[in-house]
Image (tube, rainbow over all chains, first blue to last red; front, side, top):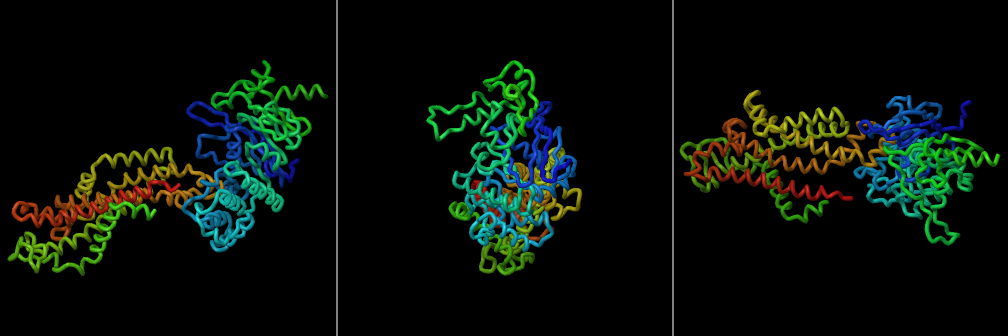
Length: 330
Length: 272
């Protein structure tokens, strides 16, 4: 039964990078769904495969040594892994848009803001340049850029970081996409601007019933913004489910550790509870559960076997321990 | 950027020289005092006088008028050479840098082979297989400037194609060809301009060199290199005939090189 409300369904996605004979499993067996009007958060440390997951969905790995090696990506009833490059180009920008991390470098320095937005419109729709520019102005209004008319003729270096990120979002919105993938859209911005941009995303979601995949490493952003969340670690899914449930009661030791590593305002803390060790390189992954070298609960089994995804009450956890606990409580 | 250029005095000097030479090249018919081709065998190698302000050459032609007319010949040649180099080099470099892989290796191997031959040898090669004359010489010199442009543009394209705004365009569904020509190449324009300016100077020298070897322009046509060549047997007795065209070559090359260096300093420092 295909659910009409599901915009994107990724199943058992595996993406690897190949350097000579070495294979680096950047994303290994990830499954998630995004419903219409839903914000899915993907959270994890640097190098946990968040961005690679996004690039795999966009099929933008062509320029790297990376390649999707397994699984399926289903976008509104179409298998993205099977569509041709030409079709994919039409999907990109028109149906799935992407907002990048660095607003400072994501705009072409030699073209004006108006030209860049208009160009994306012209690529996907049969409109004249003039109409496209008029649309660009409306879009700048939508993303709440003051003096939109004037900004259209300005170059990226004349805008502030927050303003540029708004322009990027406007570019993303220009063809009324169904899904926006925002790869750490607020990481490079300061906190007040961060909040404004996030508020903007929320508003747009309500206004257009947009689905958004929000990639971040900020648990605060996850709590504030998302409906569902997927915690990633070393290319694997650690935990996936409703944001509220997971944040309130994390099951995976990694999620738990992440939550503990957030500084709290309501308690006096001498030290922050950091997770010992570093994330493993994708070319040198530990056997068994990938988190075991840093996990306080790791047992012999964790070192040898990789835990399967285990789903209970609509939440998925990849950990033997989580499984045991639930079993005990049953 | 303009301020940076003005700041450097040598660049201003170079720029002024280039402007003057270009102006002379354009306005030469109005500046000359005599027909540069007209001989006066009763008045050969005459010293400077009211009638011939720089004197006459070994065939009694007015040196001043010939040097002034030569500016146009040299400039046109240099512009065509640089045109060939820039257009072909940019295209090859852009395709090579953007596509990478086998295309890149093949194109760059061809460029390396071209680069292995000295400019003058390549020009001689073209002059020999086609008919000896200006066009073959220009094509030869032009082609030999292609590899440098190609290498340069390839490098720039390779670094710019990794920039986030290119990735952003890709994620917006832009076609490869328009990403390359609309988003990547305009960002490489700085180094191309610098290389073009420096090549202008070089090609003036090379073409003068070919003229000196008698492989450039038709006999009689005022061209600095050929003038120098024709007059060289009088170098000991009547040095003036050689000095003027020689100085013109030196000055033009100096102007373009100073301008090129200045532009490089002004454009290379990335604004970010």
